[in-house]
Image 1 (cartoon, rainbow, N blue to C red):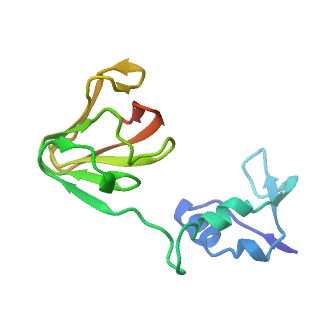
Image 2 (image 1 turned 180 degrees about the vertical axis):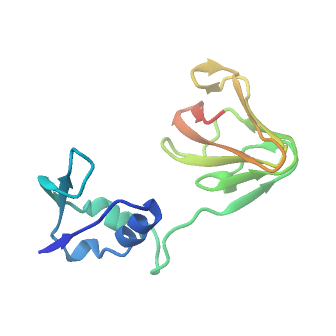
Length: 170
């Protein structure tokens, strides 16, 4: 059993301490103390066990065949084209204004799979649904990610059904 004493002075310090916790070696507890008058006469207001989430511990390396966690590939995107199998579960990095078209009956992407979307440094990334495809429940819909110079606009595309997608972050 381990107890943590953290004085919340600087967020960075807390993040640094929490990132070093060996969550699989618990149990861990956190004690909360407060002085309602703002002084240093603290009273215990609670003790809570910090619980690890087994799925989160597994997800750290899920799907990998080595000790290196899975990372999406960066797919350079500088000219308009149709969605491709190599886009699925990866990140599209748009650095020149272009359109990605979601074609009808695209079978290389399973329901639930995703694509990260990024528009960089003034580029506009347009996601366009072809005939027979819906985006955010709109037939032949579209979405735009417009970045400004020196910034990135990002979002997320997820397949929700045959010829049906949702995008967020526009």
